[in-house]
Structures are given as structure tokens and as C-alpha cells.
Image 1 (cartoon, helix red, strand yellow):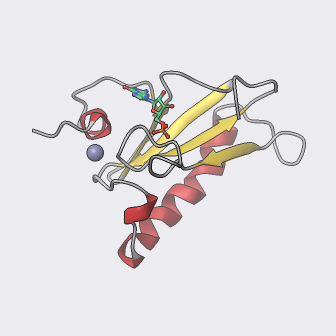
Image 2 (tube, helix red, strand yellow):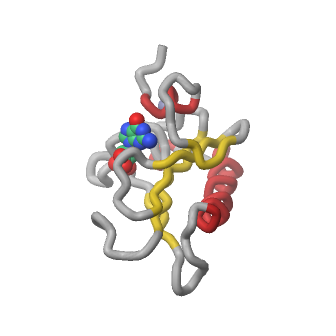
Length: 116
Ligand code: 5GP
Ligand code: ZN
């Protein structure tokens, strides 16, 4: 059995506060938010990081990046340009990645934020 926490969340073995789900993707609220709105979008398939993506992942990454603005608005981010959101993908040790299953942070809401 996998020890990957996000694979377990994707499989429903660990509960999460879901924002969106389809066959390939899952979005859920971050357990330790840095901003008033903070959720993660993950592929259900285990991809370790942005350092591990190839051209075969282009469509999947495109889906994540086009889903992000839609979900940001649904979750309460104010429209561009007064509102907006931040997309962060920590990659590797120097990139600050703690969970080694690709995830896209979507952050928004009024400042100040905890950090970032
Ligand atoms: P990273 O530093 O790897 O980019 O971020 C990992 C993020 O996952 C952190 O913001 C952390 O709060 C979040 N996280 C870690 N474990 C869990 C969990 O079990 N459930 C949820 N919802 N978020 C988690
Ligand atoms: Zn995984």
C-alpha cells in the first residue's frame, strides 16, 4: 500500500474537505491555510513533483491550470484585478516541497496572509 498521503486522500482513505473532484483531479482545502482561501489541486495519479512532468502530462497540467481560476472564484476569490489569487507549486527541497505528490496551491482572499 502507498505511503503517499495525497494518494490516500485521492483514494478516500484519508478524509479531506473537497472543493472539486473528477476522474483525474481532486481539489481540497489545505489543512494549514496560509491565506483566507487556500486549496490544493492534485492529479489523482501519483506524480512526484513538477521536476517529474513530461510532455505526456501536458493535457493534465493544462486541466489543472484552467480549473484553478474557476475554483478560485467559486471559493470566494474576488475577480481580477482587485481580487485575484496566487498559484504556487513548491518543487523539491529548495523549492519548499513537503508532500512529494504534485500539488498546486491556490491562495486568495484579503491580505494580510499568514505568509506568501
Ligand atoms: P508543500 O510544502 O509540499 O508545497 O505543501 C504541502 C501542503 O499540504 C501544506 O500546505 C500542508 O498544510 C498540506 N497538507 C499536508 N498534509 C495534509 C493533509 O493531510 N490534508 C490536507 N488537507 N492538507 C495537507
Ligand atoms: Zn501520491
